[in-house]
Each structure stands twice: as C-alpha cells, then as structure tokens.
Length: 217
Image (cartoon, rainbow, N blue to C red; front, side, top):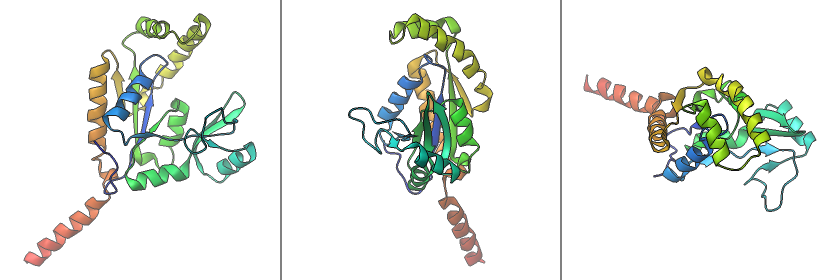
C-alpha cells in the first residue's frame, strides 16, 4: 500500500520503548506493510562512517553549522550524545507533512517531547511499546546476543526511567505478541491518517456542500 497522498498531511510517527521491547522489529514491519513510510533523517556533527551518504543516512554538519540551525529554530529536537550533536531538521519534516509523507522517528522520550511541543505537534502520532514483564524484557536482551552482560544491566537500569514516561504518549501497547502488536499499529496509523488535522481538503469540501445548500434555496 502507499501512504504518499498530497490530499492529506503526513504523520510524524514517534515509536518509543525501552531497549528490548520490540521497537526496531515493529518499525521494520511497518515499513514492509507500507513501504512509503520512511525514517526521518537526522542531522549530526559526528564524522561520516564508511559508506554513509549525506542526506540518506544523516545530514552531516560541523558544530558551528549545527548550533546555528538550533539558534535559528531549524531543529525540531536535538540532543548531545557522547560529544556529538544529533537532531531532526525542521525543513525536510515540513516538506514531508505537506506532501502527505509519513515519517518514523527513531528518538528517545526527550526528543519525542520536543517534537510534540513544537509547531508541528498537531501532526505527531506517538506510541509507546511496553514489554509484557521485566523478566521477559531482560530475557529478550540476552536472547538477541548483541550486548555484554554489563551493557544489558545498564539498559535494564535505564528502562525503568524510560517506562515512567508512558503517560506522555497518545497510545500505549503491550508487546506480548509481535503479530498482534503489529496489527494494532497498522489500525492506529490507518485511523490517525483520517484525523481532521491531517485532511486539509475537508474545509473546502464543507464549503462546497454549504454552497450547494444555498443553490437549492
């Protein structure tokens, strides 16, 4: 299916969860379900890695350029991580909204809070993914075999703070069944695309209907 439709506004989809709750897997499934959903490309001050392309993997800027963009309110959200600045440039996001392009944001709850509080907040759809239990969350982190025990312990400590922000989101889903959770996400996105704020042509349609009423008199 295709989501690009200039007759509606694009959604800014913020999908958050503690590490191991299934956010990355669900994000990949959403893009398979609708290949026109794309990740929002972040900006960064870190140097490009081998094979990374400017404007595809990241927008690469030096620190002076990045700080100027912040000062000029060209960043929807930004943060400093391990000495490098990261953020979401406003221009490409505004262009996507106008074109009816849905963007998926890979940001933490702090970044999500900044985007929701921005001038584009009315286009935000925020969803928090919870694990069915803390033991299951830890089991998943061990099962995927990507991290050392020390890193897993750190992620588990961080997850408590991340989970505490669940009330800030529009929707909260417990990922106890991956297929069922994916289905719920599809339903939510389909419905949210029909929100009045996402349908600019509705005003013109209502005007036309009122004109037709007047013509009948």
